[in-house]
Amino acid sequence: MSSDTLHNVVERRQKDRRQTNRDELKINLPDASSKTECRLTDLSRGGGCGCKIDPAALHEIVANVPKHSHIENLLVGIEHSDDAAVYKISDDMALVFTNDFFTAMVDDPYIYGRIAAANALSDIYAMGGEPLLANAIVGFPVNELSMPTMQSIMQGGIDICTEAGIPLSGGHSIDNPQPIFGLCAVGKIHPNKIKTNSGAKVGDILILTKPLGIGIMATAFKLKMISDKAYEEYIKNITLLNKPGAWLGQQDGVHALTDVTGFGLAGHLIEMANGANASFEVNMQAVPVIDGTWEYAIEGMVPTGAYRNLNSFASSLTFAAGCNIDQQLVFADPQTNGGLLAAVDPLDIQHVITAMTEQGYPDVCVIGEVIERRKDNIAVAFL
Image (cartoon, rainbow, N blue to C red; front, top):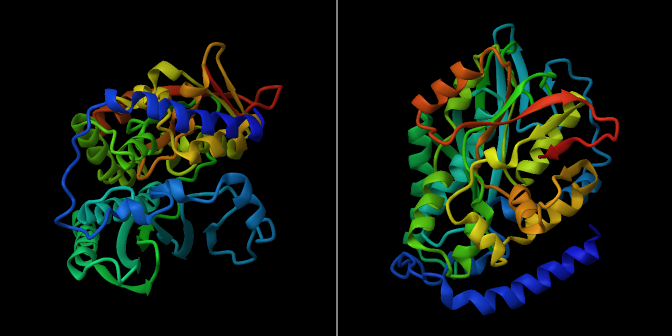
């Protein structure tokens, strides 16, 4: 699909469908007026991982960054767009390093702080690592937000770090027109237990630990068109730590691991497939989504980032006949603190599914499998 066609779809859905159907959706949002002078989301051009630069532009930006380092102890760099860098400090210890921040996608400052911190720590867990400490990355429009509001955002971050068992040990702040918050985090892992996004093997089973729909829910929220039930599910999933990633890192049967964030499920599957020089087949009906996601997508409440993702990855994707653009956009929807995506040896799959369920992830499920690279070089086929 050409970018011009996508642009027309965006225009039509956002102008016509929203206006036509606005009164049919239940509007009952939490009252954030007592917490902020204005809606945090009104200060943000894009929220959560939806504010990321689109994949095609990012590829150009980093085109001249060396893909390989001469430093022997740098075990994982930017070669395959992994979630974090890994540096070996001894035969049995390596450090995992990441930083992540974004603009607000909710109006409650405390929840915003929790989301941003959980999303940043997810990069450590997605490498199979265990966090050690974090510093805050902070930018606020200090003349527009009150001190209690800014303190609430920080408190959300502190509480997530406490939940992860680590200190928030410092940080850096600036005066910024858009509120931004996140963490710079360091974790640890055994050098032989690192889980990259490129280790999948033919025959592996693909699992996902959280439902899709975060970006679509965020759009519905910003438009004041989200129902109470959908908002509750949205917040529950987006603030849930990906702590089981540290456990997955210890499992020899887990061959590849990443988390689903700004490039959507489709984009992160493509990264994994290309890294493994394989192709993935995904059962669309098996992929979990937050209740209401399909309906909101049909109504046009889809973030622009989903269209950008779909356009950027079009040559590497194929969808089953009859899969319309509304459905395709759900699989390209940018996720914030999305689920863990893993390629698992079929002999270990039942053990992994059972363990993840017991650790508090009831939506974990099998979504597909790894096959030999297709002759047409398609990385991911949604069937």
